[in-house]
Image 1: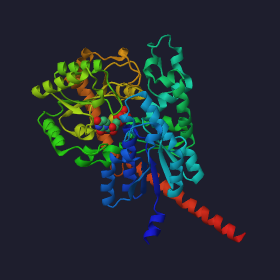
Image 2: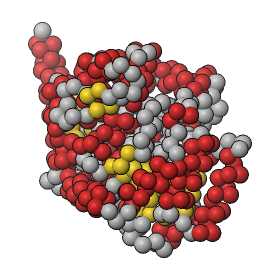
Image 3: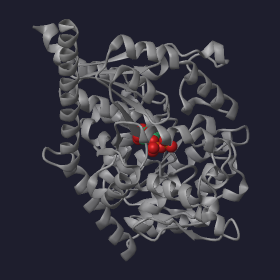
Image 4: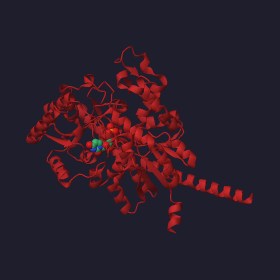
Length: 505
Ligand code: UDP
């Protein structure tokens, strides 16, 4: 009976890309599938698994059919130190390339795993275009997992198609993105390098877009009520199915322990209670949370401007600083600053990894300074927080436009250059005066802030409703799982018929 049951059960493999912004939502989604009766296998490497295995074990012990299948990362072959298996741990462009090389080397062993595990479907990160062929070989659907918004994907699509930036006479002259339901203006420097100049990265993305079109469909960590216009536009332009099942972080990480440990080995009890006590000591909606996601690194000069900006703004704040942000000059500066903030009780520095979901959901948190990474955007939205938008690279500038121009819940700090941290120069420096000004608008008691807060609250409510039973995202997930079950059934039926025909012949 048991083997019959497991044979009938839908088996889905999830294969995440090793960067927190890709991996965390995919793990959340995999856990949601398991919670809805699917047998789930997550394929990843050892160092990556360590960041979420405790949660998977806890789900398994609660009766869900979910496990991790480890695969060895070829660290030695590509010349990386042990345990550097995630983009968040790279400190140079060279290391970035080595991780890419290591992932490329994993293709064959992963294909063997797919073959051995015989799943009914694979959900793979957009960065693995080759998996569309792996799925075809096995005669199963590949679902493309998008790590950003419908809005940014549509914007990138129309910029690639019509190249409106070519008509701008200078890098700072604005153009309108064609094909979108809202008037969205940007300047050429704000769009990703690979869209602007057709450089080597563009050729890297080509197979990714191609593979989306050949996939069974796309999974979005987004929700209908948030960007329905772009959900519709995306389905007409891409011509393939999509399912909006977000926000997955809020759906699956309901208790404080899950929120605190998401994406991290474990926060010590002391660290967590110190933070929570600090937040508890502050009035409601008085704390600004400042985070630039998992990949961005700030220059020393930018750290100094930000520190003084926050201090001069006179608002309570929590700031997440990476250990790797410290440079020789910076070390003393940040530690002195931290000491000063401790004494004034105005600011709280978190080193390296913050329990972001816990902070965003705390009643004392009243706003966020964000780099507009899609996950942080959704998570802030779910907590009904208005935002100061400070995009850094890639699609973050598109997400900023969604927040500021469409949803009207963001105040832009005014960044104008789209570059990854290791290419960024002084031209992108945000001065302390700008920081003071935007913090004043967002956290102040003016009309603009009140209206943004009201809109953010509405979106937060919609975000909570959509993942409840009967909500859009909830229905979308159930519909997808049912569809995959039917596909499995018809495949099994087809195979049976083939066998009968063969026997008759
Ligand atoms: N995150 C976190 N603590 C940190 C930094 C990041 O929990 O200190 C999580 C955050 O909640 C989000 C993800 O890591 O889910 C980062 O993804 P996002 O798309 O916001 O930005 P990226 O890191 O990809 O630039």
